[in-house]
Length: 351
Ligand code: NCD
Ligand code: ZN
Figure 1 (cartoon, helix red, strand yellow):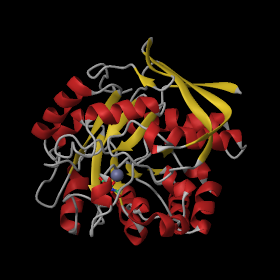
Figure 2 (cartoon, rainbow, N blue to C red; figure 1 turned 90 degrees about the vertical axis):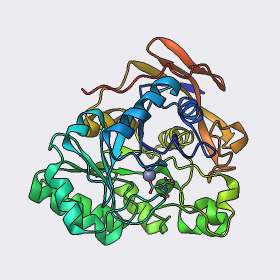
Figure 3 (cartoon, helix red, strand yellow; figure 1 turned 30 degrees about the vertical axis):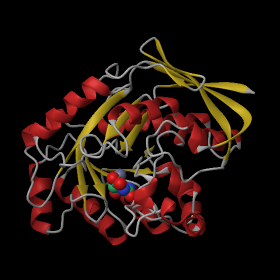
């Protein structure tokens, strides 16, 4: 067995559900799950209840995180047709999140007018993170080019999408992108067996899409979990909401790929430490994440800290285990125990 020591890692796409969805997850349980997964900072999405679309909601959520987070955090502002963001709120947000296709929650942009107004008003220095799938991914890429804004494409999942991102980057368009671990490790074959437990937006794709993501990892700026917990009862209902938990399983899965020689340790640091800092202009806190590599383990929901109590990776073999996490000189996780206290997390600062 060997020990791998990594710097502070940021999961740049999570949904910790507070305020409004605390029965699925809350800030304390979600940030504890992050630490247990070797993640020292999370960037939380705005599709709360109510959605975080103005400075007041953002400030309310910032206070909640200040009281309850066990790891560091940054918060996104959201926008809707009737809730255009005010540029002065940009300073407090890590970025703006736009939804161009339907997903969980009411935030959705449908009109070109609203989209253009948002792009026009948003400061060029702060990224606009976009949920787009398939054809709609071409829209933010064009707007990044035309309007000189920084666009980040969330959870790129398919061969044609990553090909488009590559082409845009090769032409010098200022876009960045992320890939989610479920799109790197699961296919629609798995979805057949797992049913609603493998339903998320964007949906799982074919083996050829998974291959394309791995082959094009060089154009991927960061890997982020899109940790989107829902309860088992909700997932087993007639209309299951899309989304799967992932903040706690992302690093063991990726380190297993390092162990298998599919990914270098340097590239892993690029995707979880350097990438999130570069894309969102934040500084990762001083931290060390120690991982034991080489053992034979299985992912089990029973060992996870997320409130939702299940994982789409149940029973999956991994060769890596988070042993200890030290954040700002304090041991915040060790051998299965979260030691970081709610309120000890800090807001991630601009670099
Ligand atoms: C997310 C959620 O449940 O909040 N669901 C998902 O399938 N990814 C929303 C989102 O990020 O699209
Ligand atoms: Zn998401």
